[in-house]
Image (cartoon, protein in one colour):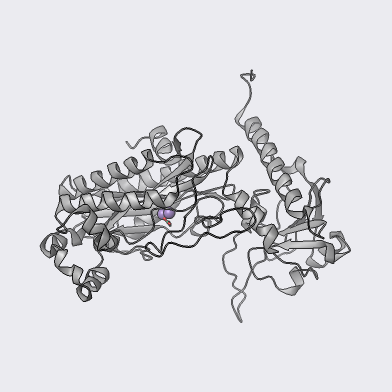
Length: 452
Ligand code: GLY
Ligand code: MN
Ligand code: MN
């Protein structure tokens, strides 16, 4: 039995240690039948604009971050050699222009042999001599000065094993994903309050960043903060600065990061308690019905297909089109209102890797011809984490497209015109698959800190 004094930090260290065991076994397996003796994982390098000293925002290589959560540390290198304690080459440039990285001190430090270096040139002296025995794992194109003559960069067989592994989360990763959801929920609460107060998109966005304690560059993806018709644009990228005179609807898609792991959460709000509000409630309910259908060994695409049927039902209820559920799906009327995928893997990347990997040898599953935007077409397994995010949008471009095929006459344009000023609806939760059932990471976070 666990001692009652087992603190949160101790628990984190405990599950982190087991997480490292998984990564170690995975790399041992990946290197086993190769000529390579060392995997070198780069944290990444700062990139500058051409003819400028203004850098692009830095994002740590997710393959590096999976080992240790250094989120703002370029030019660090992890050296993994099977059977040996991993070595961290920790870059601490001595510079008077920028603040140097602090000396590492966190729950993970004891698991690495840490070598501090003060310049790029110093790094090579700590790397294995024989570069033919090394592979380099990076998520970007690195200039030669950062690759140190290692020619085997991201060999496919090794990356396939890692990517396949990344799609099954460890307990440590799940804890990070929970924390990322809890942080995002703080921002979501503030954002919905601000909308009710009539704030501009820009003000709502800034209040989200403040409440979640994320600067814009730290967010896992650009917040979607869309009021009224702007909510019809799937990845609406602007923040209107003026207050909106007649707020009707608010679609927010915004996440947070914890130790490199992302949350990805969408909610939609009606300004008044009206018919639009009841449509949001309908989507919210159907989203939970889809989640209830999740079962191990079913293919994710089955959920996507079910979502189309349920969206068809809602389209008929609201009167956006005429016909049967089957005819709406068959004639792609549902694609007009729900043109995106139902969801994707979530982890170190918002659209995490492995959605089309059948096995760790890299056998690829084809994208669906019928649903080309679906990013996940795999069998559901325990400890996968993915999003479930159905939507219902009024998108002129897609409605007009239907004019050129015969399906236009199935649409009820009067009702569509009525819905158009509200833009669209999306409800998105982050789901962990359990042996029996699921853990709704997002709704748990909302329930822990209910809106007041
Ligand atoms: N926020 C990006 C997405 O939902 O996929
Ligand atoms: Mn998503
Ligand atoms: Mn999202």
